[in-house]
Amino acid sequence: MGKLKHRDRAPEEAPDGEERLEDQEAQAAAAEAEIELKEEMNRVSEREYQRMAADLRWEVLEYIDAHPDKPVEAVAGLFGLKEGTLRAWKAHRTMGTYQNGQAPEAPARGREEPGRAPARKARQSPLFKEKKESRPPRFLERKRYSNFIHYFDKTPPGIVCPHFYILAHANGCPYACDYCYLRLTLRHYPEPTVFTNTARLFQELRDWLLSLETPSLLNTGELSDSLAWDRETELSMNLIPLFDNQKRHKVLFLTKSQAVDNLLKMEPSAQAVVSFSVNAEAVARKYERGAPAPGARLQAAKQLREAGWEVRVRLDPLLPVEGWQDHYGGIIEQINGVGPSVVTLGSLRYFRNLLAHAPAETDVFGMGVDHGDPDGRLRVAEQTRQEMYRFCLERLKCLRIGLCKETEKMHRALGLPGAHQSCNCTIE
Image 1 (cartoon, rainbow, N blue to C red):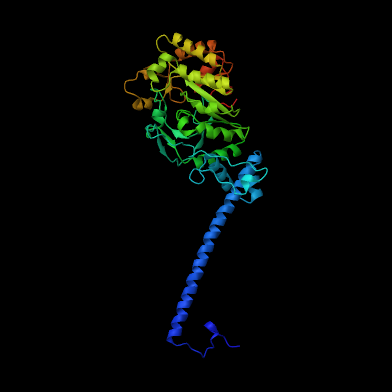
Image 2 (cartoon, rainbow, N blue to C red; image 1 turned 180 degrees about the horizontal axis):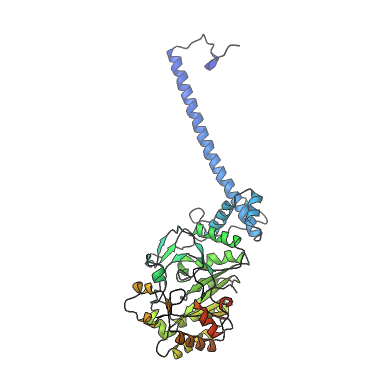
């Protein structure tokens, strides 16, 4: 059988010029219609794909809520997903970053299905709430490019410090105490900074919680105050639910603030510890001018303690100011009134280079002596330091008392357990 051309015309029936032009126009119209049809089908397919993806995401997140003890890898295998995808979904749901801050929508049929929980309403923005225009920002915002979590193990032999994990959610502190080591540590970043790429922070945190087998305390207050900006960032409200999903690790909030509003809105968590750093009132007035008064900090600590939270206290750094016995005796009475689970004592200690970055008018570093200690820090004279520690140990009613970054020699002199002590950064 001979082949036919367009319109089933036989080969010998060649069209004239006008018919040939009509053929070309018809072919062009048909091709254009075919392109439009494909584009529309693609648009429909994309919408359908997005709907199906949202359905699957909703189903998976509901399954995770119903089976909180099921490992991420097991859930990923059940639904045929990559673990990274699953962790990202969980992180974004926690932060409310789906659809420009809106919660992921459930399938239309899902809201009324028997047994299906209603959609959770996410906060308007991820981790960091919108700051009021009338309030000037108290910190800079930028992305963090290095790891959010790292292990602190720099303390040399001869200095007692339980190595611990740090969560770098921010750099710097608004209180700017005269003696603060962050003046040296963060000397290249003079402005307090809060990191905004929280999706990666939460993904890294979930990996840490799942992969680390040794029970550990994650310290959120080593490079910044943990709660100074909690009203703006809601850090506590975002971290604690993640720790509540497991029983192995705890999170530590270390602060000189009194910003406990968000914590008091929550049920006390067995996986969270809140530690307040205080000093004698006279010392704070002179060297901690930007921070709330120690009495206000301890009042906030007492509120949390009475609400059922685990509260710890750091009395640090002890300074041998004139009449120090009276000053520290007074603050110890207030600490005893709080009833903390652990009290950590520390004395002035600093690297010599810190002086170049501290306030020129401060006299605090005149109390330091170079003892040739293993870490190279200058400290209060040994005999005075020991006398201050004994004074505090005799008056504190807390049963678990440790020293912060002190020498093994000082631990032996005081009869303390050294490396086996309980202190601010230990999980016990």
